[in-house]
Picture (cartoon, rainbow, N blue to C red):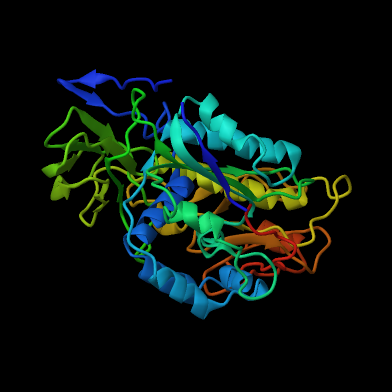
Length: 443
C-alpha cells in the first residue's frame, strides 16, 4: 500500500543570484543530472494525468504496450471500472520536482536494493532528513519496474490485491499521483537500476515522494510555474526518456526567480503572486519561445514542445548513459552463470531509439563493450535502431545475443558473430511478460 504521513515541523539552500534575479535550483540536483529522462517521464505523465483524469483513464485502459497489457490481464484489472473511476476525478494542479524529495527518494531506492525488498521502511524520515518540511506527505515504492511507462501504470492503475477488480483497496498510489486527499504540490521520483543479478528486486527500483510544503520554512512553496522542454522525437505524442532538452533558461515576467532546465528537460519556478505573466524560453539550442499564462491560487503547467530545428543535441550525455545502462542490464545474463542463481525470466534491456540521438551529434554508430566474449579481441559496433532490444538467445547455452529491430527482424550480424554463433534468437516487439505474481505490485 502507499505511505501517508502528516508532518509538522530547515530550510533549503538559496539559489545563486544573476542579473538581479535568483536562479531557483531546488528543482534539480546540483549537477543538473537529476531528474534524468526516466524520472522526468514519471513527472510528465503525472502532470498530464492530473490535467485530464478522464483521458488518463482511457489511456491506461487501452494502452498498447504488451507488457502493461499482460500486467492488466494478470491482475484481472476491471478496465470498465478503471475508466469510470478516472472519469469521476476532478482535474488537479501540476506538481513541481524538488531535489530534497529526490535525495530522500534516491536514498530509499538504494536502501531497498541493499535489503532486496520493497517496503516503506524509513521513507518518511528520509524526507525530513533531506531538509524538506511537509504538512502532508505520501510515498510510493515499486521495486520491480521494467520501464517508466510501466511504472507509471503500476502506480496509477494501482494494480494488485488479487482478483477482480484487480486494483488495490482505496487506490493509495493513485491518490499520490492524482493528488487526492491532499495537495501534493511537490514531488520527486528516483529511478535506480539494480544490476545485481542475485537480487529479486529490479531491473529498476522506483521511489516516489509526494508532499505539501510547509511554507513557514524558507525555500518551501506550493505554487509554481512548472513544465518540461522537450522534442517528440519518436512522434508518439508523449514524453519519453531522451527527449528532454537541458540548459534552457525559463524566465517569467514577474517574480524574483528563473530556472534552467535539468538533464530531463524539466523546470519549476515558485510563483509568489497570482496574475497574468509571460514565460520566456531561450538558450539550450531551442528556438526562442514565449507563453502568456494566468497564475491562480495553484501551480500552472507550461510545457514547451519544441518543433523547430535545434542548434544543440538534446540530452547527449543522458542518452549515452541510458544506452550504457541498457547494455549493462543485458550483459548481466552473460556474467557468472555458474556463480549466480538464474532469474526465472530472461533478462532483456531496452535501448535508446535512434531518433533520440540527434543528427549532427557525431554518433552514427555506438561503440559497445563485448556482451558475451569470444576468443576474438576488440569492441563490437552496433547501430542503434528503434525499439532495439537485447536478449540471450534461448536456443544456445552460451547465451549469445541478437539485436532486433522494431518489426522483430534480426539486425545484421557481424562476421565474427555469425562464425561463432550457431543459433540466434530475435526478440519480438512483445517484451517479456512474466506472471504478475512473480513481479509484485507497488507498495
